[in-house]
Length: 124
Length: 383
Image 1 (cartoon, rainbow over the protein chains, first blue to last red):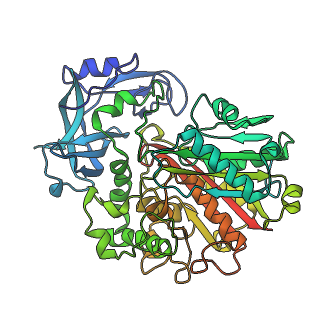
Image 2: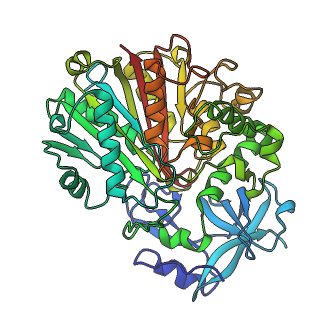
Image 3: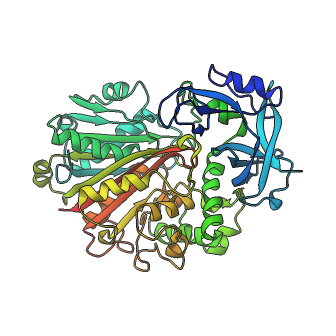
C-alpha cells in the first residue's frame, strides 16, 4: 500500500478517473503541448488546459531501488508516450532486470483509498 | 545591477560542534553570528543587515533579529534550501551596493542529528503527484546518477573518486566528522542506500552552523583581515519543466553562467572550487554545468584524484566538505562559502592550501536534484 496522495481541486479529477483505470494528462488548448504534473494553466504559455486520456505507455528514463527495510521499492522517472516525463514507482519487476529506455506501461497500485499510476514492463 | 566589486566577505565562522544536544537552534545561530563578527573584528552594534533562511526559527528573520538583539534596517529571508546562503551573499552585496546596509550578517544553524524537526511548507502543488511514490532525498539524487551513467557511461568507481578526494582533505581537519582516508573500493563496497548511490556517496548528517559577514569594501579594507571581494553571483531554480526533464543538468548551469559573466572570467581562471556535495553525483553534475569539463566527461575529470588539492586539476572542498567534514542542518551551502574564503585568505590547512589562490568559486544546490531545486554560484577574489 502506497501513501495516499493529498488531493486538491486540480488533482481530484485525475484520481477519480484512475479508479476507473483511465490515465489522464492535461494538454494546452492553445499551444497543444501536453505537460506533467497536471495544471489548470499551461506551464509553457499560461493558456487554459484540458484533460485527455493518455495511452499509459512510456519508457523508463531512470530508476533507483531503495533499501527501505522490509519494504523495498523502486523510484523512477517514466517518459510517457505523449512526451512528458513523470515521477513514479516501478513495480512487478526485479531491479536487476530494469534498464534505462525499456518499454513500460501503467499499473494502478493502491495508495490509501486512491489508485496511483505506477509502471511495470510493457506486455508483462 | 552588477555586484562585482561592491562588497567583501569580512567575517566567517564555522561552528565547531557536530552534535549539539544541549544547545538550542537559536543559540547556535547566535554563536555563529558572534564567531563571524569576532573573526571580522566587528561587533553586534555594527550589524545593520540580516539574512537567514528557513533554518532560522520563527517567522522569516523576525525571531532571530529579536533573539540576537540586532538593530537592522535591511533583511531578507529567501529560502532555497542549501543554496540559500551563497544566494544571500549576492543579495547582501546588492543591498550594500544599493545603500540599504553596510554590514550584513548571514546565519545558518540546525541540529538534525539530535532533534527531528518537521517544517510545514503549505500545500505544495506537486504533493498529489509525488507523495505516493516516496521520493526520499537519496533516491531522488540517485535518479540523476543512474541517468548520467546511462547517457555517458559514468561508473560508480568514478563517483567514488569524489568521496576519496574529500577524505584526502578531511584527514587534515581535526573538526571533520569522518577523518579516515577511504579508497574507491571502500566506497563501492559500502552498503547501497538508493541504487546506484552507496552509503559513502552520501554526505554526513551534522548539527552545527555557520555565519558570514558581508561588508562595504571600504569597511573591509579598514579591518585587519585579508580582503575577499565578491566578484560575481548567479541564482536559479530548476524544476521538472512541465515534464521536459533533463536529469543530468542542474540549476547551477544558468546560475554559473550568470556568475562567470558578471565576474568577466572563465572556469579556467578558478584556482579553487567549493562544490555542493550532498552526494557524489551532485559534485559531478556541477563540474559539467559550470564548464570545468565537457558535458558527460565529469567521470573522467574526477577519477585518479582530479579533485585532490596538490594532485588534481581542480582542488575542491578542502575542508572535507559535506561528504566528510560537516553538513550542518542538512545544508552545505554556508560551509562552501566559508572554505572558499579560507582559501583566498591563505588560511586553509597548509596541507590543502592552494598556492597563490586568487580566484575561487562556491557552487551550491538546495532541494531535490531530480525534481526541483535552487542553485546559487558565487565567484570570490582575493583583494
